Amino acid sequence: MRILVNEFCGHPFGMDLSRELARRGHTVLHTYFADNTSTPKGSDSAAENVPDLTIKGLHIQRAFVKHGLLSRRAADVEYGRAVASEVRRFRPDVVLSGDMPLDGQRILRDAARGANARFVFWLQDVYSTAVRYVLRRKAPLLAGLAGWYYERVEKDLLRKSDAVVCIAPAFAEQLARWKISGPHVSVIPNWAPVHAIVPTPKDNAWAREMGVADRFCFLYSGTLGMKHRPELLLALAKKLEARGDARLVVVAGGAGADWLAERAHAVSRDALTLLPFQPYERVPEVLGAADVLIALLDAEAGSFAVPSKTLAYLCAGRPVMIAAQQDNEAARLVARAKAGIVVPPDGEEHTIEAAMRLMDDPALRAEFGKNARGYAEESFAIDAIANRFLSVFGDGAESDAGAKNPARADSPAAARTTLDA
Image (cartoon, rainbow, N blue to C red; front, side, top):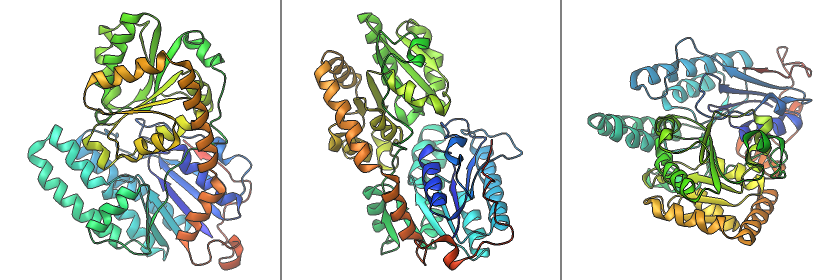
């Protein structure tokens, strides 16, 4: 089959799926939005030595301002047109699209229809709920109207998709409340590339460069928006400054990272280190430098978002401290894996108390870290995950690529494995 995987953010797990699909003989084009620098990206290593896999970072003409209301919508539309152009060129049999803003997703869905391709909506978050959440804080007068509009758009897209893949049971439950259910709706949880993110010694090259190889280190890595409660990180940094025997390292981008940078002067550099996203090849070292890894999510945001960073944390074999509602899928995952501590996201005291407990109990940290890696190895096997996606794609997708659809004249040659960033 010819499969176009469009994962807007460029997360590593999406590239992991595309790699496995191509390894099985399918011809795969993987697209993502290269101009969105607020999320960490996978690398071209996913495409090495894999025939018929092309990874392509797409650019747009206008400047991308993630938090500008009108400019953001215009950028989403332009990106949707860019992916639609790839559909017309590549002529896929199946389009899988996730993390895609709805204005772009609608354009892509129509392009898939025009190419007679099956369209699979990969529901990574409930977009209309997220819009309401953001606008209540930035433009409250628009929140109700915009939320109503995008809910209608989202429902229409979901109903008219050939299949829907939800990353959490709670999302499928939301669809059921919208009277969208049936065999075309599946739940396939996200994962992280367990073969690429492996446990490393704490005393590694990156840790030495950052000065934490012989120092207790709390670490947050990934997108840091305002929904991730950056104020909890600031409070923890102040506590560590008072103790004088540990450091908080934040490797992040996004509005929350900007907020934290503006206030970092309130804490000594010895207690708080802020860094941009690191090269993907160094992620195992980055996560390995931590004694405790941190994930955060506002209580209200838990209804529409699942922090994917938690999945990489499990692969790294480090204990996790997550401040989120207990019914959030990431919090449930940490509890199910017995890989860390879940605390309520409201109130600095919960976060600080859990951090101090982990800091003072090396045996507990070791147990959580061992459980984390064990869970990742058992649950993130890409062959089983790919089987589930191929079952969703249907129509002979699990057979050899050439059995149903012989390669067309414009099929990428086996050696054409690239990343355009």
